[in-house]
Image 1 (cartoon, rainbow, N blue to C red):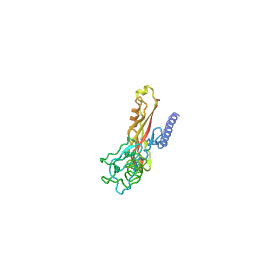
Image 2: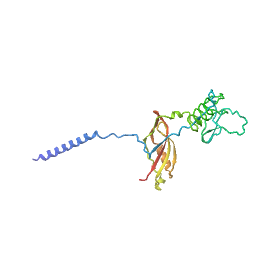
Image 3: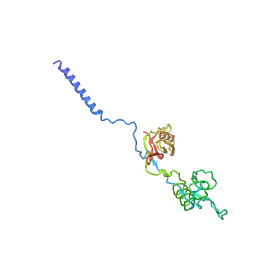
Length: 260
């Protein structure tokens, strides 16, 4: 009689311990591992990919068999009256009109240390407008300079100055993916003034997934632009891909400031 309560308590402790052990064993394998870093799909409020500008460029030629002559581009202008030529045949025109290419006035022009106009990728001393057609200089068509089509210069079409590597910019594109996101800190001035709102930034994401050249598109004041730039500078991305290779790209980022 006197030993029965002791045995009952001991048996009860054993039963409870066994039950707890069974619960622990049954749940140990169901908890997923904690990921240190996982890709985040880009939400519209976080980041919007900015596609590259449309192809720019132009081309021309004078149906001459020799390659186009090396030379600097004519002055960019918003309208073309005379396409560029290698040799000006009328030395005393009644109404002289300067040859130009169709491009914004602030276009950065390639530097070529040759006096006579020509194609910056041409050959020195040929005195040829190139085998292209429609006037101009080059291997393209339609009164520009270069291998493109139109009154601009370089690969591409429809005006402006195209880059020699523009063809490599075409193909299958995969947008960048945000991997690491750091939230911005409030400035003391903005916190005291209870300021809320959104700072919009334009960010260049390089081929290694790091943000570069962060610019403020829409400020908010009270030092919040600096805090936004500082935070986004610590973000990390899986870079954009073009034809399976990582490439730089531009993106617009919205950094929201909200007081809790």
